[in-house]
Amino acid sequence: DAGVIQSPRHEVTEMGQEVTLRCKPISGHDYLFWYRQTMMRGLELLIYFNNNVPIDDSGMPEDRFSAKMPNASFSTLKIQPSEPRDSAVYFCASKITGDYGYTFGSGTRLTVV
Amino acid sequence: RKEVEQDPGPFNVPEGATVAFNCTYSNSASQSFFWYRQDCRKEPKLLMSVYSSGNEDGRFTAQLNRASQYISLLIRDSKLSDSATYLCVVIDTFSGSARQLTFGSGTQLTVLP
Image 1 (cartoon, rainbow over the protein chains, first blue to last red):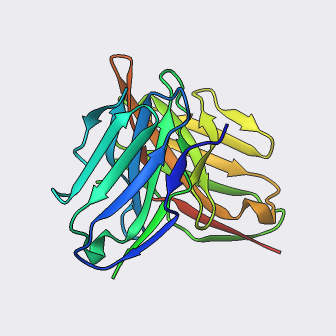
Image 2 (cartoon, each protein chain N blue to C red):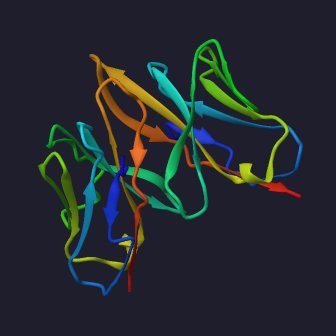
């Protein structure tokens, strides 16, 4: 099992540019979560999907953020335009119904300059 | 008031010491409780679940007090490798469907030689 795979591991971009983060959940997992972690705010849930359908996006900070899950094996989180305050580590996690064990990817460390 | 609160630490203890962390949660309807461990610049990983009757896993003991709405983690005979941030996690479940985890901000532990 390859685990949850995120790419890229690191991203440095200039303010105003579009950033796309990618996630491949564990095969067979029907829930997918996007989290953001900063020193100030800790781990925050941005959005989660169940069977590829967005269920709760109340944590998405603003319209500059969007997430999609076109199929069971792929999800993206897009920031357009990016701002320096978006700098954080973005984690993707997945789980299967009935199991409370969430598996996190290694994260994408985003720096917006 | 935060939904899940932890003492951020840091806790600096010598090898072999016993250390305990507490965590309080605000939602009395919370159903499931966990401790996650996060190493520096890594993703959170499930350490152990917390059961109503309390449970042990080697040197680690977790306890739940529903009346006072807190959970605890006790580490005995601490090792250098225990140095990490420990995240308290709470899940609320409704109608059999799991909602997202709510993370505490974490307690940082450093075990000193």
